[in-house]
Amino acid sequence: TRSTSSSSSIRKEPYVVNGATYPLDTYSNVPSSIMSKLDRNLHLLPNHPISIIRQIIEDHFSSYTALVPSSAVVSVHQNFDELGFPPDHPGRSLTDSYYLNRDYMLRTHTSAHEVESYRKGLNQWLLSADVYRRDEIDSSHYPVFHQMEGTHVWDHKDLHTLPQLNAELEAKLANCPISIEDNTSVSESNPFQDTHDPVHAQQITQHLKHSLNSLIFRLFGKQATKDGEPLKVRWIEAYFPFTTPSYEVEVFWEGEWLELLGCGVVMQKTLDQAGVSNKAGWAFGLGLERLSMVLFSIPDIRLFWSTDPRFSDQFKEGEISTFKPYSRYPPCYKDMSFWLPAPSGGGSTTSAEHGAAAAGGRGTQPPSKVKAFHENDYCEIVRDVAGDLIESVTLLDDFIHPKTGRQSKCFRLNYRHMDRSLSNEEVNELQDKVQKRVVEEMGIEMR
Ligand code: FA5
Ligand code: MG
Image (cartoon, rainbow, N blue to C red):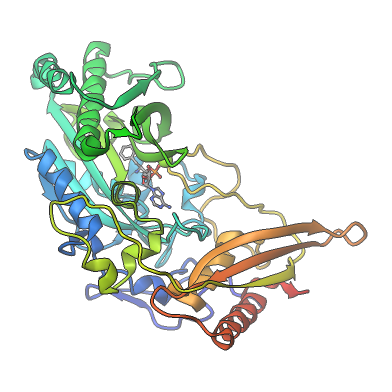
């Protein structure tokens, strides 16, 4: 019989984190390569770009309490249930998230700490942490990244101060050289909440937008004009189970729109769970790597994990500087073609985005014996074998045999060492290991 997840066949010992033991079950799917990232804390490392950006944001929102959670392990309840994620939300699936077991997981977003933070009675807080998602492999995706959550809530009796606060923020933004496009509107699909006075909801939304625009101004101020053109930022409508209305903010960078953050007016249900029903306000969650890559011109997300002094010596606390690339060692690619196992229903999806609407039929049930092929499972094995030596995995060919109906795929695995040249023998050895494991664990057949 085949194992029901990609790593339970390999792992025999329960997970131990901060002295707590998490017994394995059919959900357990965190490989040791990921477990080893739990104590890296790049967001707290002095002179690291992720930490520099964190500090600048904390400095900008100086009246907000900066929180750091103790561990990346949260309950499924904290990460999803408490925030109103429906049982069949795609983010919950074993192909998209890391589970220690059916009850505990590695947080997929810093929002997992919203309710406990509101429960502390804080009205303005920031919280930075490492977050974990199973994902594809390329220059902007890594299974561990860092987010910062920020919120500002008010006691209902203090909401009357909002017009004054908004006026102050507007004055500060008056000479902002950034082009901010906002065509969002409040509509049936992105409504105010029934329990909110629409005037207050509007003022909270304004405060959210002004606060984040002023943060963007602070971060991008020096590069506000690129090649004579003002930097372009846009607000778009979004959906999250725990906010409404909801938005995302994107910046136009290197020819495309790059998503920086998600945000919205906090669902009253979320505040009720924390025992602070008398409050209302907003929350955002931003990607610290996304901001750092743009602000420091860092071309590859794996560089953040490098311990090469040619990387780490380039950055200094409080300063946004331009990364000077050092010569990279040559890449080496190998292709792998295989037949997929016969399908058994279940299907596959691709989105781990936390705004995604629920997709049918993919709850937290452990998968059936013959699992549908999912690219994230494949990439995970590649990463477990090759670690940071794998630069990208790209689909070259997807083919269905006209007679047998069997499906085959061909992937190109691009290997590169950050600090030296890889030999062909070394890469062949890695490729062989990957091949062996995917045959054993995914039931596929090499062509
Ligand atoms: C969330 O994670 C929500 N928790 C954000 C939120 C918080 C909404 C509070 C409302 C209120 P999302 O999955 O879109 O949403 O991720 C938020 C940000 O994290 C993205 O905008 C992006 O900057 C960053 N991010 C998401 N996925 C990745 C990834 N694979 N690699 C690097 N950064 C990522
Ligand atoms: Mg998003």
